[in-house]
Length: 222
Image (cartoon, rainbow, N blue to C red; front, side, top):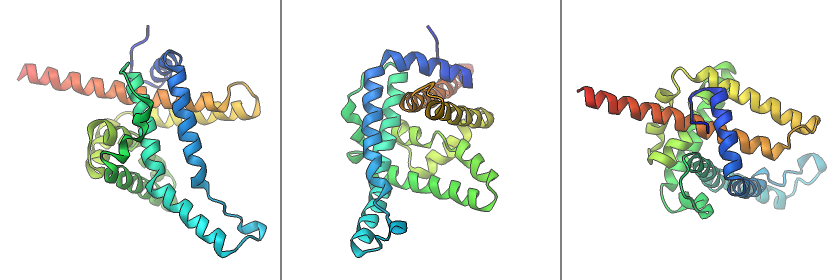
């Protein structure tokens, strides 16, 4: 039986173990989040000659949905993954918990992270990648700890110190596995995304456990 470890292989290994332990739950979460993501893509249609007022309104609705609705479901899905990594009892309906509690924090945190990473990518690309890696824990911190957006960003930056390259490697590995799943049909794409979601939640869980152990040790020493 694996235990969560703050390493890339440890995270994917523990995530794989928990993925099959709670497969039906995580599969349903993946389906819910995937279906919920569809409207955010919008009808677009500009290149096909559908530049009508109706399409403009639909695209506007899709943008509003992407800003105000999808982040809550996406954050909720990642929070559910984290809970199953901890072997906690969870209700699938908790995916929508953000609509009841901390809604503004979720929306603002999503916007702030997107803005920070987007600006970094536009200016120099590399800073954007660094920001994306160092802010990878924001969504967990907002949902798990109830932090406001700024506090979650600061905390994620602190928690990912020394783990930046590890997180970057996990992103690259996920992309490679997803590519193999699409092109070579080795691993189904949805399974790759589920495994990656479990792995990143496992990494946060492991780092959080290490931080708690360190705080407890310092408290005893004091």
